[in-house]
Length: 158
Length: 179
Image (cartoon, rainbow over all chains, first blue to last red; front, top):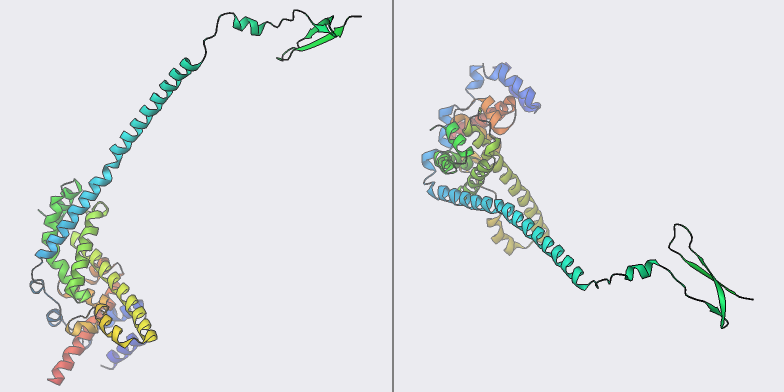
């Protein structure tokens, strides 16, 4: 009896779960005096609500099922963006191809048609004559290699 | 069909099977939630959330485990969380009430922010002790199983159970003396 009181005091004094559990396992579970101070299942049950006392749980069942179907609906909606995304990508790529085709077509229409021979005129640089101070002058044409620059040097004839 | 088969069917995509699980466990779930929360309305909310949580996380459920224990873990966590939030709000509200000293307004609002009142002697027990007592007395769980449900060690569960049983006994003895 004295030992039980000491154990009770020790449990109350040191609220450390491991320590309390140690005392419960090593003394209280084995001691009939201490066990008598604890409520049994039969004593504890009346204080707890029983399943038949809960009453009708139909409303709860309906509510859960309704929320579940809502959730499933959300899930279905959540899955939809995938095909929608796929369609968006397809439409985007199609639009890009159409824009490219249109661009090429417009380019071919708007670009002036080159007359054959024009290219030669551009490529061939030609000076027919040069006059300096209203007198014929010598002309020197320099075309530095590797550049597209042409330098024309004109010199008066003495 | 047992729980494992029902869960397996649900995982295969047969969602209607989950309705069977709901029908099977809604009563027990409500009993546990009322034991912890102390009122029907909050318990219903907690149960709804618990079943939806279970449905959403069914793929995480370990088929080797008991579905009932897993569901009880979810219910306990949600109920204890709900109580914590209410207590936090209650403390905040009490502080505000004290500071503002609006007696009329506070009188009417206190009803909507009241703490869940557990029936009878259960209010003498902490929420964890109520959960432990329910699992032990009604479900017949051992301390180790209670620890699994409450996600604590078996020894912690044993200590909670010891305290709960001691409090109940003390109340019973008090009642006997007064009678």
